[in-house]
Structure formats: structure tokens, C-alpha cells
Image (cartoon, rainbow, N blue to C red; front, side, top):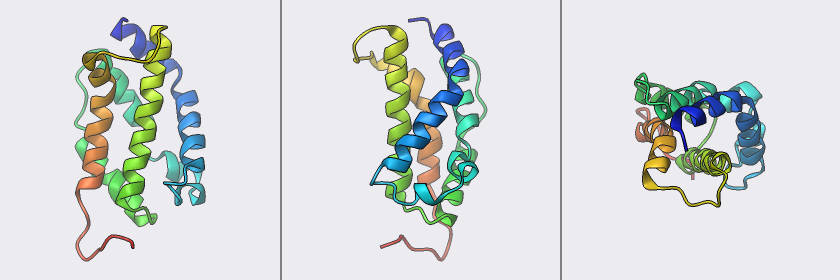
Length: 142
């Protein structure tokens, strides 16, 4: 599989991937807050993140994603998410992206570690940062 070709494919299917992600997270019982959000609140930094993942897959330099991840985590906390919901959103995104890689490669699921890393590293870094910081004087939802 050509990483450059997949990066082009990712850019051309970004809108469809976002729609699939929205539908999936809004149906997921592990993310009860998602259906209450507006489309803008729900997608938040997702288009920019997918663009950066595409850049990384293509071997291009990517801007630092951790500050954006922290901002995403702050936004989600303000909207009433708990850490489990943020992490579940991340899991859904990774599953969608990895399924897209498998479909693009034209084979049964089962990527090499390098292929998985190329697709997932930017999203993991961003979402890890989203869950890392909790503002002062806040406690997890019970």
C-alpha cells in the first residue's frame, strides 16, 4: 500500500469519515453526551486532526497536535464529557481509520504495525493530550 496514495484517499474521504464517526458516536451507549451536542461541538477539531493524520501518513511534517488535544479535552469537559467518553470517541475514530486503511489496501483486516502506526499516531497523540489535563478545582463526573 502506498502511503502517499492513502493520504490522498484520506483527504478525499474526510467528509464521509466524519459523517461515519458522528453516526457511530451518537449511537454508542458509551458516549451518552454525544447525541446532545451540535454538529459543530461534536466535530470540534476532527477535520484538522484528519488533515494532520493525512500529512503524517504521507510522510510530511505535521504541526504539534498536543496543544490542540488539550483544547479538545477542555472543550469536552465543558460540554459534560467524562474521560471514558473522550477515550471512547478516540477508539471509534481509530476503528474507522483502520477499517478505511484495510478497505483501501483491498485485503482482509490485519495491518502491519508500521501501517497501523502511520494511521494512528497523530490521533493517539492528540487524544492522549485531550485526556491528560483536568482544570483546577474540577472532579470527575460520577
